[in-house]
Image (cartoon, rainbow, N blue to C red; front, side, top):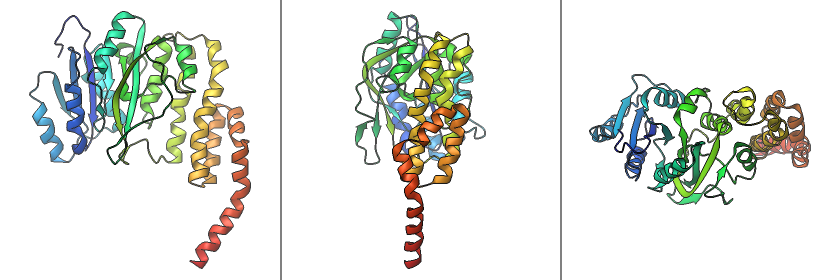
Length: 332
């Protein structure tokens, strides 16, 4: 519900499923936001736990809170999409998963102040904290974010490399109409949020504000942790997402930019899962399966990852590791 006709309505999406131990904190943090024109839209994806319904029933009478309960389980990404397309009314949107919470109560107010002064913006982002299982808050990384700046799309894409700019789902307020036109949350992949926001970046200027907007809880059950190789391969759609904007009429980025920038970005993003497969999991079969998927996007990048000295060294050592493992298994 819009409580202030002078300010654009912002919709806070809270998709949730069986998150009874976190959900109340998420809703309370949204209610604590100081921005006056706010609606809070909670979409419960058919949680079987009756305690979730008990929590939601307590908030249902509030005038700026709307509760939806899906009759059947849609799945994480379909719940995002249904909420955005069918249940929100705001000109601007921010998604707060039911197991996360806003950290700074002025986050949305400050984001919308920046929007008011810069009509060409399509999103405003800030930093996100991480909460480990112990409850201790940690910075996701210590790279300084460029505060209080307006970035054109090309500059923002370049800044993704050293993370002096990035758009984290719970700390990004985005323009709803543009998001709808871009077919937001179109893929049922773990990185559906990144895939969508990385395309939106091409559509206008990006703003940053000097707050730590939200906390991402690392509780071990997060969808982004412990990915299978298939999920890693599916998430390449998110890595390739910016380049799909080459022919999109909403894009403000010159076509020539993608040729200069994309391979470096793909290399930076794809080498991390590849490293995980061989360094932490010692899984060479999945490593080559993953590199084959990368090669479908860029053979040059796939080869570059394969020929990294550390990867080649691990490849040469692999037969000896396998022999040693078999020997220790026999003697144990």
